[in-house]
Length: 295
Length: 295
Image (cartoon, rainbow over all chains, first blue to last red; front, side, top):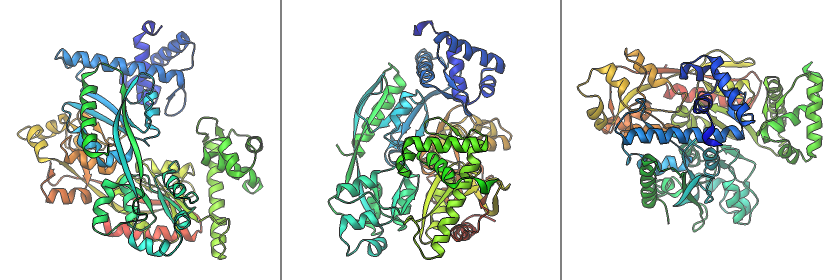
């Protein structure tokens, strides 16, 4: 059935999702908004499914996401073919969209990208537990994930373990933890979390035998901001050892429970496509991860 | 009319929006999911408006957002009253949700927070052109915005100007810009942007008389990642002068067009509420901004 889908309609669907509105897609495709609307409707009739939620911006439905992924894979193959023929195609550079978690982006991921020449990167920052969803929706063609289970149509390779150390500013430890029984004190002390979804600190407190981390909880939704907030004494938190190391050495941070840590195993998932661009990126990412992450 | 709204129903609406689903709201409120559903329906009948989009997660409609903001303001007043009475209320710490742009969060904003004791911060990172929308939706009670126009129900204070310098790695300049006529070379060279919405670099290229920045465009959606990508030579970009300064001094970055820059004027907007917590935060933020930003 897939091969019978009219390409023009599939590409129009992709443009609407990428641009966010029917009007913007019309501008990008150099056609009228009513042509865009007719093509999407025709594709919905052909597939017998609603493909778009008419929100602002427009979002694909579950069925729509399948076609969007298909459209992106087609576009990728087409661009690779042009590239291999030594032709510039539409004059567009080879674009690779990747979902990556904030801590990887702040530590080891960018150096990997500089090892690959000639590609244009479109990075999406997302929690490592949720990057697989972006892959499933077809929004990205590769992702750093915590899940070792491949998304349908994707391959998986392990990258290594990222180690997190429980740390706080020395002044914070004096004020909130010193001389108090440990798991309980940790559960009651102010804590820094990435955002509302982040239960990593809770998991650590529970593993020590305490309750989830305290109700006094700051949300700082950037990797570097999280580190800065912990170093400034706003709360305790689990920080990647590569980020914590220099501050531990300079005495600006201290370990809460020496010998205790949390490890997150990271994986590289990408579309199962014979694409030279994706293959070059995968090699660079796995090589850089091997140098930086724990095995 | 507002005073006639049943508080229990309004609080239930807020819980559904905060928790994302009816089921999660039921758990948080210690009632059954069907009680949650009935309360929301009753409130919709009473107001004659649909208040929630039944998506996953649930989102408030425009009418729903008005009531969500109202519910949060009520909760804030209640908590402040408990705090002033020296009572801990429900045992919950005083929580302040703030929307802030990535570059402010990476540079001057966190030191402001450390000046305020006893508050729990919930930061939301958003482009400075879009933080006002979060304020309007009632998701946050204060925001750093680029717009000087107050959101309904909010007050505005100017914070100062953040200066952005057009920079690139010296090797990048040699490879892509040296010896070529300037506005045109800049428009064609690889460029780093924050995300798809970021047209700041385009605006700069246009102001020099060139076309929008080139099709070879990387997206790196964190402030520090953006800086790292530019320093690694992936493209040119506009970087806050406080971030660029140390790298310019060490020769890891160079100015593209000495004397040219882009300024963004930032504002502090917050709910028009007589809240000691918000007032203390506003004072700390405006004082820190005055020390860091340009007038």
